[in-house]
Image 1 (cartoon, rainbow, N blue to C red):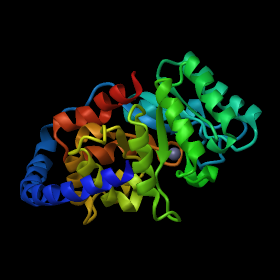
Image 2 (image 1 turned 90 degrees about the vertical axis):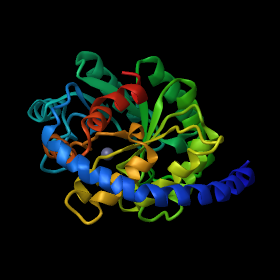
Image 3 (image 1 turned 60 degrees about the horizontal axis):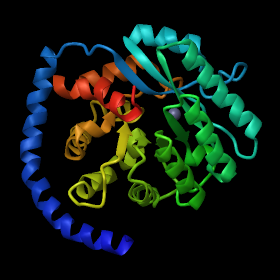
Image 4 (image 1 turned 30 degrees about the horizontal axis):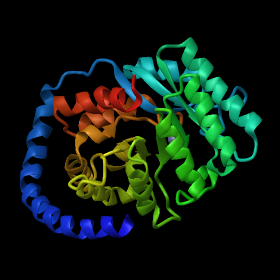
Length: 307
Ligand SMILES: [Zn+2]
């Protein structure tokens, strides 16, 4: 399967190289035009933030010592930023299913109590069969996605247990959100590609669009031209939108997004590491068209998480 795929890739690389070269001038001028158009865009209603961490009571300052990762702080920031819906997520350790369930039950309970939240649970893939069972359990209780963090949780995305979790998530209708900043793993992009190809029925979200390796994500625009890849990879813009705004690479980021397709991208803050208001204002400043902002701030999230 891999051989077939990579020979297909070589063929299409030539086609896409030619088409990207042609599109560059067009996209650049589109970006310049749309930068002017931002003056006339109107605020999007029902903005969805797809990436907010909520910590267990008593541990709220463990991700950011100056901003508590609590539901109260998140609701306050949502109101200030004009965000109406937020995906709240847990992240869990290995080898402790009691703590895993405690995290997930807390997220599920908060989402049940407050319609402004939707629940994103977590498992540790190296817990093996128990992780797969937890995916099934939280799916039955209304979870919309599973959050996995290769660096924070300490696993390799190429581990077969990860594939088992991604497959189970797809089977039960859940998306999988991976943190995709992998400073110590040069092959991370290829591993996410393999997971996407092996699990065409699972929506995979790469949070932070691979950070400083965002240009590698253009690979998915290449794959989308062929029959094997089902366009099931999405990207959230938390951290990366703030990192590159007003930088020499801002245009390159927009160009890369447009090559992949704006339908694959999601507004996200990564609260409480980042605040919601600046995260939202930054995206407004990029120069996306009204139609693109509608997709980024609302429509794509509804489609990916079934809201
Ligand atoms: Zn995060």
